[in-house]
Length: 327
Ligand code: 1OR
Image (cartoon, rainbow, N blue to C red):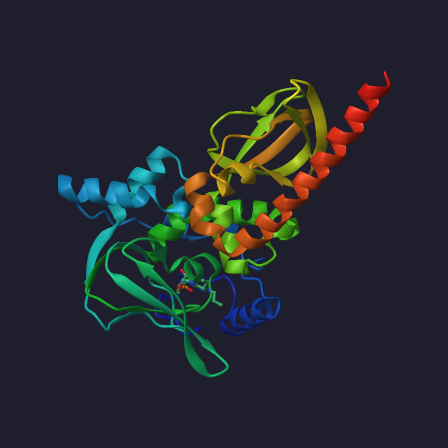
């Protein structure tokens, strides 16, 4: 990586080591970094440059920041620091905001404008996505000390909020990095998420919120509104359902790596069952908005799997009906 940062910057690895680590990561198809240890980050000592803002700017920035998944791991004080440190940057249609392979200078939040995402695949520059007046980009190079993974080009004129590398690493890096690391193994083990790229899984990790429940506690109640879905991080949950006959039955147990609560979101319906903790359980919650934003590529697999529910249910209700008939 050619350096446009000063010698005493946070580079822990030599240029060659960083290149080697980058290519090894690319081969493993995973961009979750292991070589980098945020605990040894030297950026802590550096001064964050504050950019004064008008009340209007502060309000718009507050709204933009609220949607950034990467900032979910920050506390209120850190969010205020982030807002103080961001600066506005206008861009012209046709301008490359980020060029693949370059060093990472800033992280960006989109205030307005349409941006194309391009990645070089087999020597050709291919468009792999776009941002339409919302979103953020440029975190990878700053988080994992690697060259820019994609080119971001402004398709229209636009306005960005930028945060310099030092501020990003000092305020955002550690908590966001740890959160991505924490959910990496879990998300890799969930069957319905197999179609996500590692980049998409990292965005999903940013969005998750862990919650713990004690034995017997209700996590969701049949008939409630569906506000999100859950992945089981540790322990087990029991699915219970009250049928048309008003009998409450245990339907099944879901354990680590399993998930629940997706049905209500997929079908826009009330909770079809109650979920209770079986022993102490830790779950990761994904809210409805993030579900819709991030799980597009998994919708078909999830829907297919819900078709199995009906069969499972019919079997349970038939067998319990058979049992009650014999008594
Ligand atoms: P960066 O610092 O590497 C380019 O600078 C930014 O583009 C990158 O951070 C991300 O914020 C953003 N793969 C890698 N980077 C992406 C991707 C992406 N999309 C946006 N960025 N993929 C597209 C997934 C829809 C995977 C392509 C194979």
